[in-house]
Image 1 (cartoon, helix red, strand yellow):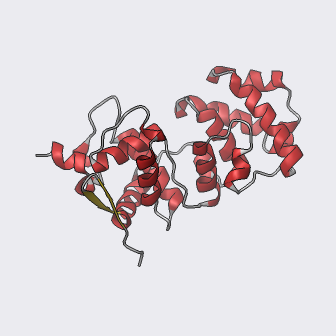
Image 2 (image 1 turned 180 degrees about the vertical axis):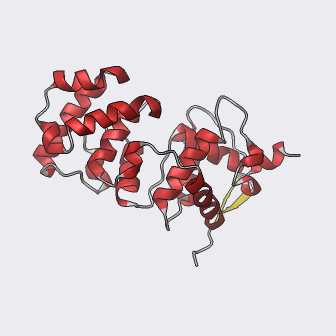
Length: 228
């Protein structure tokens, strides 16, 4: 049995144990099968997160597979030139990414013997690694109960508690604390993947959320309001 934890905000209470259970059940049936989701290799996950920054997953998938085939580990990556990296990453745009990955490979070789560090502070010392990327790598590679805080997850959590959602909300302390408090410590990897998939398939940004099919409708303040 898990520990029941009630998370409260804006006069609304959410049972985090039940939230995690409902999300994980739904997530098993609605899992988006991107190639980086079938590995726990921290190097491959780190590279995928850098590529996914401000870029659609469907656009990243073929580039990621080509990149990993050519540079399967940080040792191989450290031998790549900027020109080679630019050629393989060009179609993703955001060309500054090439410099960051080049510098990241050098930092990994010089400071971490080519291994991806598990500690958050060490990950954040790598060029281009944000709080979000550090949390994603720690969760998806090592299954640690890390909150994943991006605009999509903020949207779901904001609606869950009936909070105002702004472009700046992901930097808001209240949102950070809520997202962290809700993380399912039993299966954080499955939980966070399900949360990301829910934001993409149901709790959408540019369209009205599809509340009637939402697995967490019974817990959601926004959903309860719109259904009456």
